Every structure is written in C-alpha cells, then in structure tokens.
Amino acid sequence: MSVVSSEFAIFLTQDAIPADDYMIDELIRPIQDDSNIAVCYGRQLPRPNARPLECFAREFNYPAKSFRKTKNDIEKLGLKTFFCSNSCSAIRRSIFTELGGFKNSVVVNEDMLFAAKAVLQDYSVYYSATAKVYHSHSHSLYQTFKRYFDIGRFFADNKWILKYAGLKSYSSDMLRAGIKTFWEKRMVYYIVALSSEFVIKALAFKLGWYYQQLFHKKLDTHFR
Image (tube, rainbow, N blue to C red; front, side):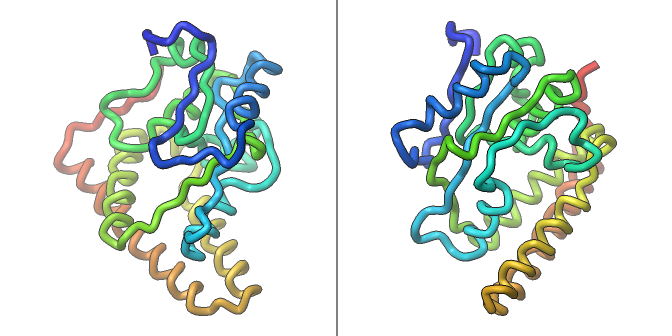
C-alpha cells in the first residue's frame, strides 16, 4: 500500500467483472461520506451459468440491501460482523496503514482479519449492495475441501476472532437458510447437496484446525 498515494485504494480480484459503470463510484461514496468507515465491500452476483448452490451462497452473503457494521453489531450478527471480501472493495489507506494492512502469513481471509481489527478498534465496515460485480465459482469437491482446510488453519491461527464472534451460529444460519430456500423452490436434491457440502466443509475445517495446531507454529496475529 506504500505505492498508493491516494486516500482510497480499490481491490478487484482478477475474475470479478463489474456489473455496470458505477461500481467504483458506489464503493467510494460511503467512505467519502463517513470518515469512520475503514473498508467498503461490494455485492457479488452469481454468473449467469452459476449452479444453484453458488447462487444461494451469493444471495446469503451479499443481500440486496446496503448496511454498515460496527462493534455494536457483534452480539446480533456474530461472525458476519467481520465478514468482508476484498474481491470487490475500497479501503481507506490511512486506516489500512494504521492497522498493519494485510498480513503476509495469512493463508486466506486476510480481508476478514483486517475487518475484524477495524471493527474492534471502533471503525466500521460498510457493505454496498449498489457496487456490483459478477463473481462466482464452480468449485470441485477437492477445491471446496482445500479452501475450508485453509479456513480451518486461518481460525486456528486467529482464535481471538472466535472469542468475539461464534463460528457455529454463522454456519448453522446459512444451512437453515439454504434448506428453507430450496424447500420453498421444491428443489429437494439441492437440500441433500447443500447438507453434503456442509459436512465436507466441516470435516475440512476441523482437519485444517488440528493440522495447524499440531504441526505448525501458532501465529496469533491479534493486534495488541
């Protein structure tokens, strides 16, 4: 970030496609209006050919309404308070530098780690539903397993996040919402597929957690 001279920096992953010409404007606007916002992340829409499970995941994590998240939301939102994606985001450079930026040692979820630090330092995180990109994946079971293995490693290294926000409530909320969605659409097959995917994710997470605990030096990156 030292090479950036402007107050705001835009992050856009290589496979995210802006949905319109206003994405950057909609990312920057909330930060310009509120100096307490550390990061604003945008809405990720499923690609036209995305599978139903991926469409549901995007709808669950990226709803149609914008909102701001602060420390006061932790009790209600739990881990979702810290949820943030730098696949489409704008970050305030001064706060990013103040909080140490993204850690090189982090396997995944560097954006969540930064958002958690920002919220706990009394800054806020903003979700802009009007800053839209097309961004979804068709992961194989192996790719899904590997990702959640790495997520397990991340939380094993950053257990302090779970002291503030529970992981189980987020997972169970998503599972219940998925079952309800697919039941209402009479897509029973996808209820089975979703449940099976959650089992795989949970197993991968546990293996990643214990792998990191047992075979790697613990790296608690909590700011002090």
